Structures are given as structure tokens and as C-alpha cells.
Length: 427
Ligand SMILES: *Cc1c(COP(=O)(O)O)cnc(C)c1O
Image (cartoon, rainbow, N blue to C red; front, side, top):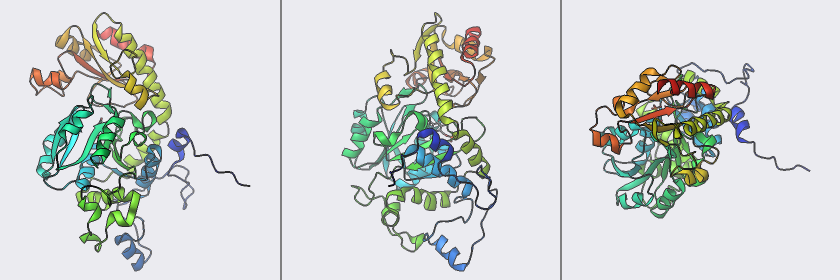
């Protein structure tokens, strides 16, 4: 008698999901298929690929075998039905909204976001005729107050930049469901190892693969995961790209044809095909290699970050530390519910010496790299007031969580004693 197979665990999926030995060469590791295009078997085969009647490789702008393994792996780790890998995290965000919105539509986003996303939503998206309304990620009801008849989606980060605040995705999802809207969650800072947004009610997940998923600071990439949970056919609002007959595919209706992975298909065959931000096969390969060690890396990232935050919290030169993993943090209870395995590795703290002390620290550190990135094996540091948030007024900087005394850390995988010693000599 056969017993039902136990579903594989997270670490097994991180190494195996989506991959099998190369059928032609036997190569065990997924090869880099460095080619622009793929030969058709026949005229009929070509026609069925172009008509979306069969899946297969056509041209690297639309997909390829290395990218496809990456997509299968991240979809499995997030518990989604399908995924689409693209050139960057920002490309993923652009394609998600291109698939959901028409000119004149709005969406509501938490204002605690990666700075580049705030810019993209405020300025670049305006050119597409899409408007963002800002809510407060620490106050789920503020999303409801920002919803208008034109709202078509809600958006937040799970662990939010820059302060590492953990957002109550479940509470925001309740509001999304009440108003018949899909919830999009940027899960970059948590990675699926710490948080699986689908389990808290997300419908669409986006990642910058550049950060913890790739994990080594060597390639830019992004991915969109379709959770398969939003019913486009029964939705309160009409999402035209998904439900209307598609003129570029012989009148095919994507939601009707592809069911619970129609969103991922629409992102590929409309968004990626027409806007064009494809990921390079080499980058997909490097990110896949990174993902194999995601569980081990995230455990060490979180343990190191907690040790550094605990050390700083009792340091005489430190005014405050914002790390959700500290039992004294305002969002500690939410972190225990949303990301119980750890609070991630990105957080901010304030130096009593203000602006001068912040600039002094970033110029004196030796192990830490002073740069604008997160989620590397290396420890990274930035003083937002003198760099990323330099152009703002003092008041704007404080509102954005980038006051004069704020220092942001992304804690790496070095020996934690060396990380702490470097901060000590810098302070
Ligand atoms: C880096 C980042 C992005 C943008 O991703 P890119 O790969 O740099 O385009 C989006 N969201 C978050 C939370 C990020 O950290």
C-alpha cells in the first residue's frame, strides 16, 4: 500500500525545487542557457507556442530554462502557483502594476517602503497615469481610510525598509478582502525563510532577488509570485488585462484560460513581453546558487543581527535601537506572529552625537562596507541623512525615518565578535 508522500521541507525545496539533471547532458547543476532564442520543432510547434497553447522556450526576453528553474524554486518556497523572474526588484513592481492597473487607477501603499519604491510610485508611475495613496504600515486602518472607488490594489513590505519594522500583513489582508482588492507584499527583507506572506493573506508577492535571496551582492534581479488566491473572474472591479479578450492572443481571456496562475502568465505574456526587462540567464544562475543556502544564511544573519542590536541597545553612545527582534521593540509581538524565526538583518539605530557621530562612524568602520545595498554576506552600513536622504529637508528626513542621528546596518555573516569590534572602534 502506498502512503502519501510528505511534502518536502523548506531546506529541501531551497536546493531542489524546480530543478532536475539536464536531460541532454546530465549536468547536475542547472546550466546557464546563454542563448537569445530557441529552435522550433516544427511550424505547428511554433504556432502553438505563439498562441499560448503550449509552453516552451521562444526568446530570452520572455523566458528560458535557467530562469524557469529559478521561477519554480521561488514559487515553491513562497507556496505560490507560479512565478516570473525579471531584471530587478523595480522591474517586478512595474510589471505587477502594469498588469493590474489602467490609466486613472489608484493603489494604496504603506509609506514605510524602500526609498526607490517611494520614488517609483510617486514619480515614475505618474507617467503611466497611476496614482499612489499613502497609508501607515503600522496602522492597518489607515489603508481603509485611503481606499477610494478608483483603488485597485493594496501594497506593503513584510519587514519594511529602512527601520526594519514588521508590518501586520494579516490585518491589512482583512481590509483588502473586505474591499475586494488584491494585496501585494514586497517580501525582500524577510525572504520566504522568515515570512511567507501567502499564509497571512497576500495575493501577489514581489522580491528584489538582489538582496537576501541571491544573498552575495553579485547580481540584480526581481521576481513576482502569483499566490493563486485572487479570483479575477469574480472580482468586484474589472482587471482588463486578465479578463478582457486579448487582441494580441486571438481574443484569449487569460483569467478564464489559466485560472489560478493567470496573473503570472499575464505578467509574462503582456508585461515582460511588451516592456522587456528580462533577467540575464547568468544572473538567474547566480541567484539560484544563492538560494540553495538561504535557510542557513538567514539563520546566521538573524543571530548576528540580534547580537549586534542587543549590544548596541546597552551602549552608552547609542540613543535608541529599532530592531523588531528585541523583546522591548514596539513591533516585537507582530514579529513573533509574522516572522517568528527571526527579525531579519536590516535595522536602524541612533547615535547620541547626531549627524557628526553618524558621519564619523561610517568613515571609521573597516569591516563594514559603506554603500547603498542590503542582504549581502558582508556587513553593510549607511548614514541616510548624508547619502540617500541628502536632498530632503530636515523635517522630511525625520518623517522618512532618516533623521540626522540615524545609521542603517545590514548585518552580514562574518564572526559576530568582529562585527561588534568594528562598530566599537568606529564609535
Ligand atoms: C532593493 C529593494 C527593491 C528594489 O530592488 P532592485 O533589485 O534594486 O530593483 C525593492 N524593495 C526592497 C524592499 C528592496 O530592498
